[in-house]
Length: 248
Ligand SMILES: [Zn+2]
Image (cartoon, protein in one colour):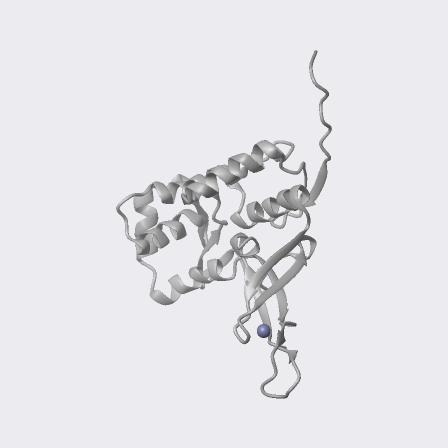
């Protein structure tokens, strides 16, 4: 006779990139095992694969994770973990003033994907020429990781190249997928530094998982001589950015 099946709760969240609602379940022991093994390896690719597999397991419906912007992936992961392990995150820092432990806690619900007002995926290069960008995603990351023996500068260049969705001028649009990598490279290399910076801005201002915390040290420090002990009182406003910073 089979053992009883355990009913897993279902939750929903709003995807930051599209505003679309997706349903998910928290990750279970089997998924936690996958993650722990990957973490132990300290291998970036293995961690990424594990994260991807866990998300694939836990979200319902026909959703292509490989094509999803990285910030969506981070946001989903945060919630999967939150429902599994608790929504309160407790981090510990060391106070730079008294050198005691400085704990800070906050709720996952308060962590948002912040959008920069200057951000746009449509970039005018000059009066009648421009590009439309798409966000870096997992499949792009895999492509870049698989390019061995190329410099970091080349990796940045390739990332930009792979994130161009199409080019447009006054007459028509030119989809990246209808053109060879060599053609795209030639296009990108023919830009001035100024024009290239405009495209770089797309990446700099991309939505990010972000949370601001206020550190306040309440540790007691010994008063000198006959003075009474007092609170350290060190204060700092800190911005946590990206998935790693929430579990450090
Ligand atoms: Zn302190």
